[in-house]
Length: 548
View 1 (cartoon, rainbow, N blue to C red):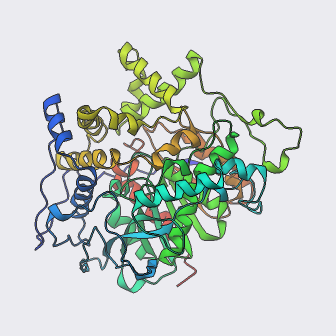
View 2 (view 1 turned 90 degrees about the vertical axis):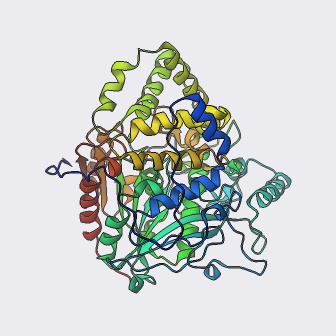
View 3 (view 1 turned 30 degrees about the vertical axis):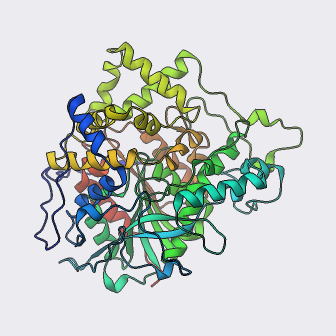
């Protein structure tokens, strides 16, 4: 059942003031470009990694538990991937508690007792040959078994794999540990000292085209809710996104003739296996996963694959839940016979005018949606610009062919800051001027970095944001509480959450619910943070803690 709690006033849109600090002040973020000249200036002077790190710290300084570095801002630039481990054999447990480039500073305890720590957690690079043959198959199907399907998943010969390993090693510049490639996950932990060794945690996962800084209005609230149950709290950048390392996108890719289930499985494995490696590295045994949009989809996929590691799911406007209008059920590997033709598992990209229109509608909804009704008005404006409409169709056409929206952004050069600025100003108009400016700097800085995890989108979702292998086909396996939340002006379909709750109840799971957040769009945690935080608080506290 969908519930709509009584209205709660959202936080005022004024910025959270920075507290007095002894550390050097950060330079103010550039104003959002409004014309080509200012966009050209911003593009010419931007170093994406440095700007993204500075933008992240501007957001972090809004939090009382975070102590800025005493290192001058101009030194917060260590290339694409921050500092490298020392030449000696290094394990994750040897890493310093805080790390931004070479910055290592003690962090204070705020009045809440929380301590905020930002660090890189090193993990082994995901091995695509270990992906299951079908993402919805039961987990007892051995991943990476020596079958023809596994060979298809690898998409490369042994020599090609070795070549890719060397290429990634050079790009990541992290060295190898016992012959394995290494990557890292940008990790913000906000935990009370007495809970730092706890084996349970709340882990918050962002969506596509976002990063952990998007939750700046939720950091403290979620951490306090988690701390009240004795748990640790983490906010992550997915591997290949935000300020995590950016391995080669070939780890996501599949040959053009790969069956859809294998294509989806390989892309999911990239994120699911990296999250599992991260969990092992930080010493957490059980997690409550809070996922937004694509992060909600991946949190659900992780929960199906590793059910023993998940205590509960909180899904904020999750992507990929319901069946799309052109839904095709792809048979499980165990259901296939030798007579089955691999082509029956594939689906051609949308080519008809109607299919392109439907997919374009969804893309425009995301670009134009907001907290106060924009998602319901975009359809009225869609015929206003013939040029814009056809540009969106080109974007949708490119989606199926592996074209990333960020690769387009990187290719337009000096127009990039202007385009991102228009999106930021429109989408986050309810935030304060300072917040919008800082979010714009953060979005642009992380978006123009080396392409990596962003290429998952066309493998996992079809144009229109419908999953190729929907979560609703596997969610009934979950035995833990699942809480769905959608904005009342959300372009994600709340019916996916409602139908999922029904399926969970039919399977015996009566601990699930679906809620609608008033005055909120797809980014409901930013549009109405007070309302969202209270529902998250209730969901976290309802899940009993088992491990100490």
